[in-house]
Length: 418
View 1: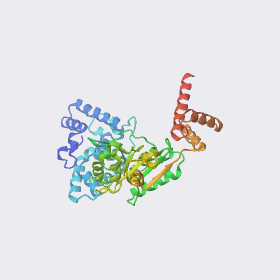
View 2 (view 1 turned 60 degrees about the vertical axis):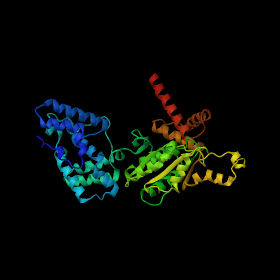
View 3 (view 1 turned 45 degrees about the horizontal axis):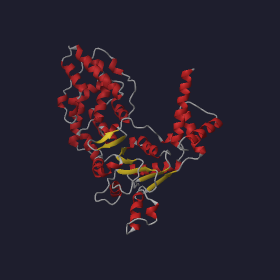
View 4 (view 1 turned 180 degrees about the vertical axis):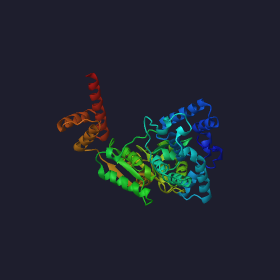
């Protein structure tokens, strides 16, 4: 029988005392003759495994998941000090690993009457760089001190809690950062063409992640050309380097000081504040908050935050011919014009996305059709692609992907009918 751990002895990871799975395990280990209790524990652990995608030694996998995502003082200190926690705090954290050691070392069959949980395989296995790092420690001879140091390194590299679990967040006025569970898994390899634009965007982002000077970015151009997808791809490509995406809406710009203060606390992470499809009427005051945040406010923008915005409009504030021809009542018309233009000028890097030419448009269709297992002869591809373009909203990446979705859907429907 496994040596019974005393979870009440935990100093740093006290949140584990309220964990439903571990409470059921403790209850069973207190009364091992009560066979029903082991099934209560095992049932809840299997539910957690399926929800989280945990595999292998299920109790160990669950404990490592909880430790990696536990918002404790060691994790917060590692975040704020960039991994340089005090010797006393490290000793207390090592103590907790010693308390948990029996549960981490033994197979579940050591204290259960069945071995199903020794090598469990869920329906959708979890693939996480955090899991890989921690299992790399416990899958070979280890000490509590080594595991504690590995966890501190994971806190530094990936964060803890939601910061370690999600690539992207939205801002909620009441709850702050909220993780986006089903974030679009787009990669740069999925974005056909626009090589120079992608290179500019990646180079700026890599400089930012390396702590070198980098610019806020405005991605401008025709609709459906992949501007938003390019920004989303950054979060997928550079997650393991500490990059996170935070999407905010135009009405939330007035909350920028609070957002910045929240992100400032995660010193080891880098955040891109993402404003999608941005534009303003000249009567909307929110653009002034954005101007102040980018440059010129009393409080400096955190070094770990950049702003990336997409727009179909080169000058983000709407300008009319009436304004340009001097038909305004403003005495100092040139000042008003400068006010209109100055917002986009505060983005140090402006990347232009033009509509694709015909060959680029057909290449996008061909790429996504091949990904769906379909190869069309070049002439058939050209005819069908051009017909779709003329019947829909013109030639762009979005139109190309809509054609592919339609075509693949028709094939599947035709196969069903056969």
